[in-house]
Length: 428
Image 1 (tube, rainbow, N blue to C red):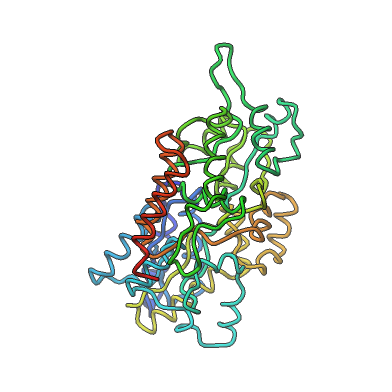
Image 2 (image 1 turned 45 degrees about the vertical axis):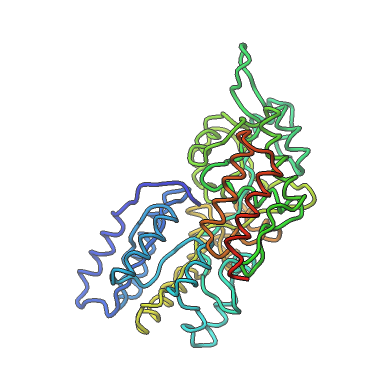
């Protein structure tokens, strides 16, 4: 979901060429800002989809602007809006919801949908994916580039360590025990392969949400006005994460988000927690047999959802809003959602997509493709509150300070909670 990739413009040029060759200019032109902070070659996939849409709808031209990671994309899209540049829609972080509402730059989809068919479409997405798109009894974001965190594991390493390659760790205790057996050292005692790695840069709050949920807690309320960083079970979750490094099952200190997939593919860790958006890339890059499983449980299973939603901007004209809705409906139609999941590894966002013959066959041939979908039953909304960047930073800092040995879990999280309380007080 979030790795940095170079944008590919060949497909966009093709789409532009098709539009240029048309006998008449498009009636409506849409500019869509799109994040390239993803796990696979998503720009190529999106370029192909926009080109196909233009072919199906010659009266609507969609130009995708690849703007960097999710934060970069939000910043650039909002800057373009302020500068009066034409931007009608975007795929932005699902957790940007409250900021976008507070700034008054997006419209609820209830203001755009008109027909019964439109309303039925709006109700057709997985509820757990819609949790980051709904508030104030309205729908502000439509899930598209969405994920959960899953456990990837090297089956060959499991066999080497005497573990069942078809049985992933189901509990925290299992993961620690498996991890100890999977650690591999050279003759000098240097670690050649760790048991497990959980990334703690880039999106530490996201991984920590999984630990907290597995220990029976959530980190915020649905209205984005309260956080629960200092609850005992949350502190316990951070303590467990730190212990993995202290015991040598995982590297001590921080683990880099951006290089973890390569470390897994290079055999430097036997297990990793990462976005299901990496699934297709791991499948193509692995030189060993690998498995994918739900994250292990403490008191229960759990993962936050993640990724991006479609948003329609308030400055779009009525015709542009209608065209944007047409495009979003087209992009999330069952067959295209199914192919999108196959091409990228992201979750297909509707149950109807998993009923298509395309995705049924793919899941039958490659069962790991169903893991993230099945985990939706145990998922919570990704961390999102008012003034999200400031609050999230306080949590990220607490996590990293704990993992690097700078602070004890309870002290770090108590401090983060106090910061969040100060920031969110005005919204309660």
